[in-house]
Length: 165
Image 1 (spheres, helix red, strand yellow):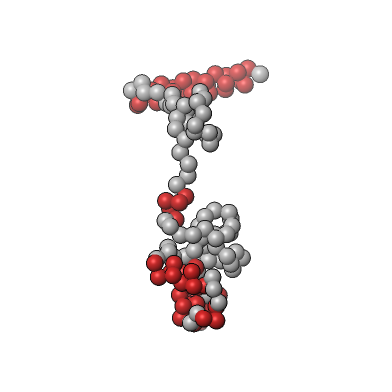
Image 2: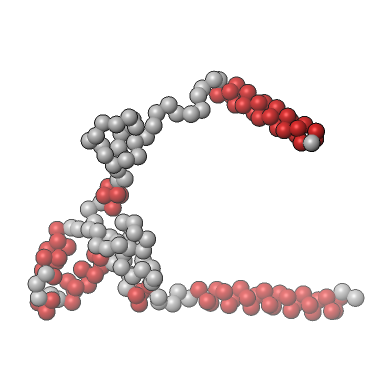
């Protein structure tokens, strides 16, 4: 029991030393902020929370891209992933040419050319599934490094059996 009290006393002395050191380093500046941030969305009501309501600048981050869905995790971001094939926003921002094509797509699709359909697709998505899953050729580098390691090991084994005795 006495050793427990001694260890508590030692820890409290260490805490006092650390606090004194921090006060000397910061020259007496306060550690805690005296202002509070308003967390609620009621900017028009007067309340005692203080601070200003600042909504997230989501529209500023995505520019003037159209929000078209939920996306992969509910955030308004563009993510190409096979598990969530429909991103929350379009890939490109709307230009006057794309806006004309969007008006044209509301009509008959048979009147649209293949080039116009591809332009609409490229405005909404970065890659097709075929492009996303196309082979990259990475297996060649992996196979090459594996064969180099195996041959180095075999040459080391041959050297050890020949000269290692």
